[in-house]
Amino acid sequence: MVALDYGVAPEVRFLSVRLAIRSLHFWVVAALFLAPTCLPAQQPAAAQPQSPAPPAPPKPALPPPAPRFVVVLDAAHGGDDPGGKFGSLTEKDLTLALGVRLRSLLAARGIAVVTTRESDATVLPERRAEIANHAAAQACLSLHSTQTGSGVHMFVSSLAPQAPARISAWKTAQSAWITRSLALEGVLNSALLQAGMNVTLGRAALPSLDSMTCPAIAIEFAPESAAKDDNPASALDDEAYQARIAEAVAAGLLAWQAEAHQP
Amino acid sequence: MIRRLHTWLFILLLLASVAMGVVLWQLRERAHQRLLAGQDSAPTQAPVISPEERATLLVASDADSSLQPQELILPLPQDMGSRARVILGKLMDLYALPDAAHPVPGGAASIGQVFLLPAINLNASPAGAAPAPRNPESAAATIAATHGVSSTRSNAAQGAAATTAPDTGPQLAVVNLTSAFVASHPSGIEAETLTVLSICGTLHANLPSVTQVRFLVDGQPRATLAGHADLTRTYLVEE
Image (tube, rainbow over all chains, first blue to last red; front, side):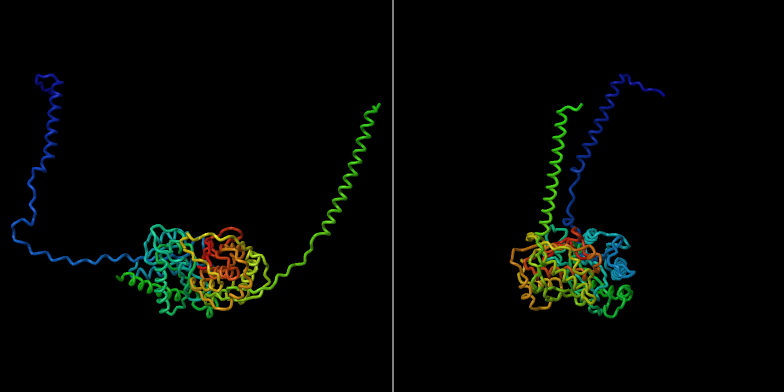
């Protein structure tokens, strides 16, 4: 390899090369800054002398998207908490069975369903309320069963109604939703009565229900008729009876959905 | 050879020992006499038979989910806490009967104690407590209305008036239940709610100054009665 010799000292050659690189860098940067300002300004389209285009047909105003209708199904108890024990049956199994049946019916009708449990898992009451509150649901149903009494019992929180507030206490958050909960109870009551059910309405203090920020109801199903059933436990496990309850509740939620979407 | 000083010292100690023995014997006799005298003077009071008074019980029924006033004539002590315990014990006895409309085993032994304390100021509570009605019948009606249970009108107010204590301001009743009662209580929202409401309503019907009720189980707070009804909150009788 042959080294070129320009007859200058190497230090001077190095400095001149650096100077050339720096000046080139300066001009490149200057060109980048000045280029946009030198471009001609774009003419507005309306000023162009072409023949006017036919006016675009006005786009039809799309209706605002309907708020997503979500139902929370809370199968009470589960895991370490069996709930009531009715012979060989436990309340946690009965509520889960009804919850799964109701979820399927609602999903078939296009209603989004959020469940607090899908298996025999322990879910604390606070966690149930958290799930319901995060879902921003239009209806929250806490499912229970008992062998006391007969028919279907529906309960709304016994908290006194209050105006909604920005910040509400955890244990009394439902107080701002009592009015809507009572309205939901009325709709479901009508649906259950139409299905020939014996319905009892009431108010109760339930820890998970009191913390929900949605129209919330506890539905407790008892044997259809206490006088007829010698074995209340077997009456609770009757699949046909559970199916009738689930159908009636699903019909009631459809009516509630229609009512919620009315302007 | 024993010195004279030692001889006198021995005699002196011997006399002192004998004297101390005599004194101790006398003290023992005195203590014995005092004990016997104390036994003799112990007051053997005849058992006080409390006067019989009318009490109003709000008895729950599972069939129609209602609270029905029922009047009974009971010997009621004058002490308010004891009176409340006797009345609630009678209510639990009714529930323990074989043909009870709201069957709950346990009976009167289910109520450990009832403590009466000055009521807590809950005006700032989010639940928005209303002033307590002074009429026990109206209180029962209010409970029935807000909890969706029916109540039959009767002359319960007159019956309760006979057992009403001098008004000492709003009071909080702390009902201490036994764990055996809680363990044997039927599970269910309706059953548990009726039990809680009948206790609250019965307390207020007979002690109108009781406007708030709280529950303990064996002296300890408990989350629920049998898995449903909240026992951590303060129940207002006007709720």
